[in-house]
Image 1 (cartoon, rainbow over the protein chains, first blue to last red):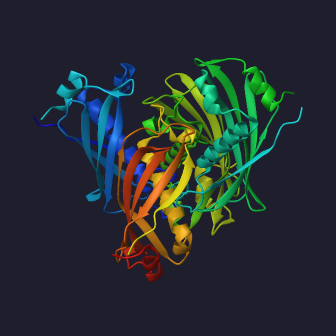
Image 2 (tube, rainbow over the protein chains, first blue to last red; image 1 turned 45 degrees about the horizontal axis):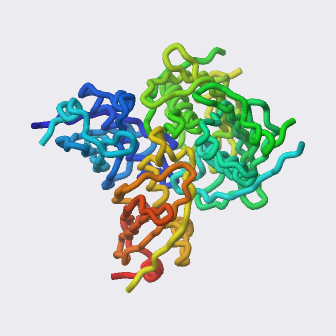
Image 3 (cartoon, each protein chain N blue to C red; image 1 turned 90 degrees about the vertical axis):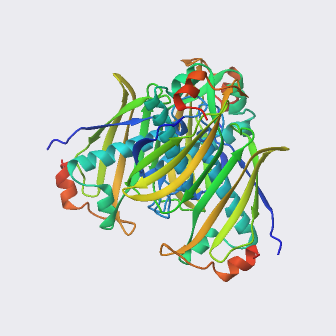
Length: 132
Length: 132
Length: 132
Length: 132
């Protein structure tokens, strides 16, 4: 089953830059967070509602590759590509673009938790994202 | 009743600087947080233990004045001066120094909460910090 | 001369919350930064362009009062009110709203610098914001 | 040639936690930064001095795996293992421990830049860290 590719944007804050004049690498994970939050919202589920039902999605793995630097006040496009959902885990891949230039690629793997223990993802989340 | 003045130190992280090459002003409030956390620890109470008993100390007011910039890798001294405790509120004043140079002054006011509602500070916290 | 009141919005990131479940107080200064950046852009000047001409606007004073907490995924309105410009300094006042509820008020004072020294604001910035 | 394993520590700040009550995943990259900064300092070079000579070390790749969560006020050990230096790139591996529990593993790859262009690492940095 195919999954939807989602796109949103973010403008670089001064606070996100470092003294090299570029976005601090660790801050890209906040952009990725915006990407998957908005991707899930567009599919019909908010992460907030998931938490209100007692679930948490904890990041268990994350990575990023940097090809070019994002700078202060840049308007960036965040492309989020959800992978088919596992039973417990979700993976999202991300691309950060400035215009036609790809700046960064990365991914996060999230595990579904309830009271701190891994549990199966709610079925409607799996259906919504698609499964392998 | 006099209150103790407390001193600790912190080294500026690259992540805390911005493209002006100096510490982003909003990050000083993290230094202030380190100051009051360590001041309370030195007096015999940890904020963590307070939270485990169901209390929270929420910042209701904060301010800072900047006289000179802190830079990457600077070792800063954080001086914390607790004000006499109120019934519900605590105030801490702070100074950030690099060597003999005063870089920043500020304060925070915190309100004691329980289940989101203002409550009286535990008596031993008031005794520990001192009251007017 | 009257000055324009400006409004923009921001959605609370997970990264901006702390374990109290609310936005960490120090992060409001990033919302204020978004407010003044967009206020200046709407008036016809970008802070980025100002920097490219060799000027910097350094925060010399900042403060915030918190009336109610902002939570994860809240959509917040940032209201920015520029004060009449001084010769060297700019002051912006801010309000953060969630719907009809005022959550936070604050201000920042910024000094115009060139090569690290205070200098007069460029005349067109003063004209754009208005003077006393 | 063998390379030195380095160890330092950091205490978790309230600001670094998120509403799940644990350290936000993106903030581990700040702990990694502390690890490599102190590892380099212990070997006799500061990153700050390198920058003052016109070099920059830009993160071009980073990743982390999370096994267990770090919590507010935890005292964490940061273990940094520099890999043999390449001509242009440095790799550091990291482990984050709380007592005897391994919480997180990760790495960063940094490229040496001068005026934004990749250049060879200064020979003394390569000698200091060791080469393959």
